[in-house]
View 1 (tube, rainbow, N blue to C red):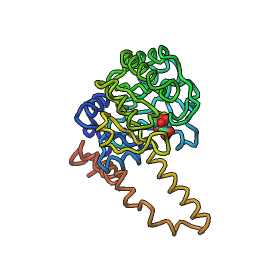
View 2 (tube, rainbow, N blue to C red):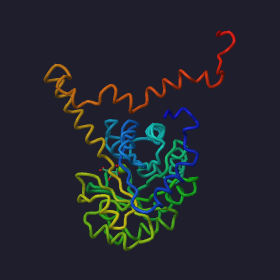
View 3 (tube, rainbow, N blue to C red):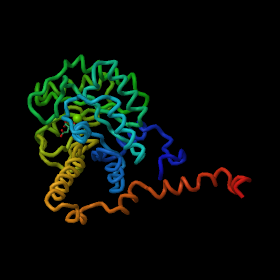
View 4 (cartoon, protein in one colour):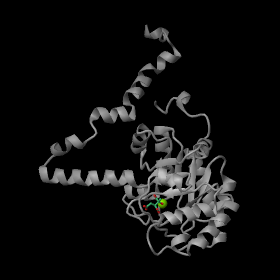
Length: 307
Ligand SMILES: C[C@](O)(C(=O)O)[C@H](CC(=O)O)C(=O)O
Ligand SMILES: [Mg+2]
């Protein structure tokens, strides 16, 4: 339904709804949605929570994922996804765009925009994709301060602390950091760049009572596992962060090549979302009906001068 109707908006804060998804039995499956349209399609496929990826957002803007975008640019993406679906959304907060006060500003902005959860990572700027080599980290204490700042600023937002330490300082250092981040106020941990089933299992064994997030990004350092496999390893959340954008981008490139080669789009029609499908997805008719009927809900018989 149109998000314009207050009666159709969720009454509980997004953070509380995200936490409920996290606390129920099983693994919370959060596919990446890089814009409002992708988010609607994910909801239609049956997902009840979503992920907003820094890598996908920046790539969709034609930029690399180096932490150079701003809080307000991310808020624009958060708002469109939340408005379009009303689903709890985990947002990639990168490094928090600075130090403690910047992190607090990010938390308030994201929460106001409708996010349900955020993850914050321990890299220095320019940050990198967690599955690349050559990352550098802030000190454990500096990151702990950011996590504490995030926990102080949030109302209901779920705080996920990500550590990139496995590939930089080693497994034990990553566990030590993760424990410190939990002591500093993190609700959950995102161990980044794990390379084997054994590593995922060992991480869970080291912190069995902390909700853990698994990042099933493609073409990275993590071998392919299904949601059920991650669940069996003890994980409480799984993201497929960039998948929607990767598949849309490939289709787009093929479209442009086809227009160039054929002088039109006619060879691609059977691969396109039709006009009808597009309008159904975004609920065009529900919005039009709302507009046509709005006056009747206030003045059922019409105004005297109308008759
Ligand atoms: C999860 C992630 O932070 C993202 O921005 O989606 C990336 C994903 C990717 O680049 O494949 C990451 O650093 O893992
Ligand atoms: Mg990211």
